[in-house]
Amino acid sequence: MSSIDFRFRRLRRTPAIRDLVRQTHMSKDDLILPIFVEEGIDSKVELGTMPGVYRWPEAELPEFVQRLWKKGIKAVMLFGVSHHKDAVGSDSWAEDGLMARIIRTAKEAQPEMLVISDNCFCEYTEHGHCGVVEEGDVTNDKTLANLQKQVLVAARAGVDMIAPSGMMDGMIAAIREALDSEGFSHIPVMSYSTKFASAFYGPFRDAVDVHLKGTRDSYQMDKANGREALAESLQDEIEGADILMVKPATVYLDVVSRIREHSTRPLAVYHVSGEYAMIKIAAANGAIDEKAIVMETMTAFKRAGADLILTYFAEQIADWLDQRS
Image 1 (cartoon, rainbow, N blue to C red):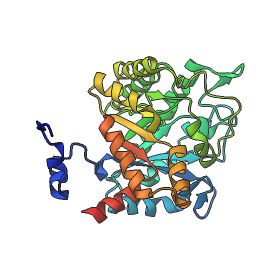
Image 2 (image 1 turned 135 degrees about the horizontal axis):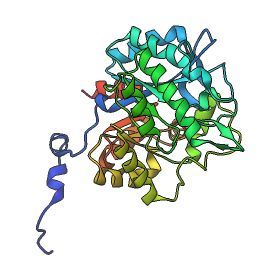
Image 3 (image 1 turned 180 degrees about the vertical axis):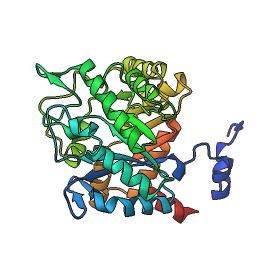
């Protein structure tokens, strides 16, 4: 047998050695939990397509946020499930609208919690699109004007971070202009900078009661365009985005890696509803080990270059990390 110059297995021999040389690490500080809050309901409602995920009533949001904080979850992203939809999503920029109310509620319940608002219009429009629709398509610049109104309401309500998800051209520059002009230059923006027109969003549309007419192909990213995906994120960095994001996560790790190579900004991934549902349903049918699959998936995100992970598994992961420590 020929001589082996180096034996990699020496550093895999025991759990202690493997822990010592591990190159990618996962912690609660990496996690952001998306939360759905529905107006007009009295108790939480489990989502049929997302087992273990609920629409929360406004009255139960404080207790839930406090529970998460005690478990070490330090950041949440709020999605409103509106009963006051119209053609432009005007409830989202009403000072007493659902978005403003849930931000105030979360901050009052747990002031230390990092409260992030998802800033879009699909949850608030009758047509389910992410802005003003004219002649069958979303009008970019009119949507930007409404987005400026929306983010100012969120800022006045006490939001800690803005997260625009509509994939409008120039949205970061418009948001930064609005916030800075009104004295909110301290509020960071986490941009959904590379968001693909993906089939993985299906359960989310049920979660937020979005009845989409048509597709979002004209404004969300083409799944086949890797170079354009990088350019989208780098453009948002130029416009002033503090954090970049790739959505969905699992099947776009090449994009995550490429952005990481070209940007020093913090980078997030959104582990979306369809990705969550596939794991949950497969685990419920005995096909996979849920915990093992989830933790392997999260490690893959980190290894590809993500700093932050938005995932519906965040609370479960926090529990698993506690069990391991």
